[in-house]
Image (cartoon, rainbow, N blue to C red; front, side):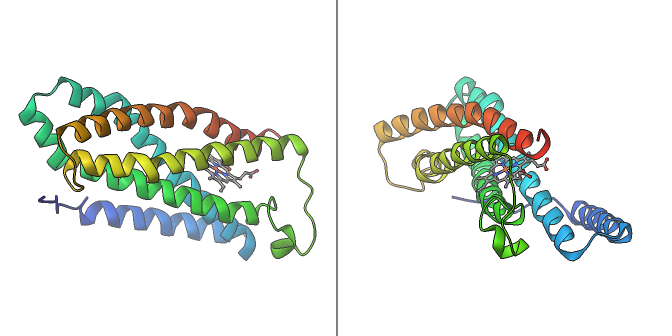
Length: 200
Ligand code: HEM
C-alpha cells in the first residue's frame, strides 16, 4: 500500500520549536528549579499526548466512522489509502506517549516510589489517590483496546493482515465498537486526572 509522504511542513515545525524555546526561557527566568522544570515538562508531554489521543478518538467516532458509513466502495478505498493509516499512526503512538509520560508523572508527583525523587514518603490525600488510580486503570484499559484490538483489526481492514471479506467485516465492526468504548472511557479518565491534579 502506498503511504502518504507529505509532512506538516517546515514552517509548522519551526513555529512549534520557537514557541517551545520562548516558553522554556520564560519558565527558567521565573526561577524554577531543575526538578520542578522536569516535572513541568513531563506533565506538558502527558497533556499533549492526551490531547492528541482523545482528539483522534473524537475524530474517529464523529468523523471517520460516519464518513465510512456513508461512502461508496471508491470512497472507502480512498479513505483507507489516504486517511485511516495516518489516523491510526497518530492515535496509537499518542496513546503510548500518554501512558509512558503518565507513568513517569506518577513517580514525579510522589504517587509511586516517593523516596526515589523526594527521599521520603509524600502525603497524598486518599480521595486524590483513589481518583488518580481509577483514572490510571481506565486509561490502561483504553490502551489495551488500542494496541490489542483496534490496531490489529484496523490492519485487517486495511489489508495489512490476512483476512477474507467476512474477517474484514468483523474487524470493521470491532473497531467501531471499541472506538466508541474508548470515547466513553476518555470522559471519566480525563475528569479523574484533572480532578486529582486540581481538586485537592
Ligand atoms: C486517556 C488517558 C489519559 C488522559 C486523557 C490523561 C489526562 C491527564 C490530565 C489532563 C492531567 C492533568 C494535568 C494537569 O492539569 O496538571 C493528568 C494528570 C496526571 N496523569 Fe493522566 N491522563 C491519561 C492517562 C494517564 C495514565 C495511564 C497515567 C499513569 C500511568 C497517568 C498519570 C497521571 C498523573 C500521575 C497525573 C498528575 C496528577 C496530579 O498531579 O495529582 N495518566 N492526566
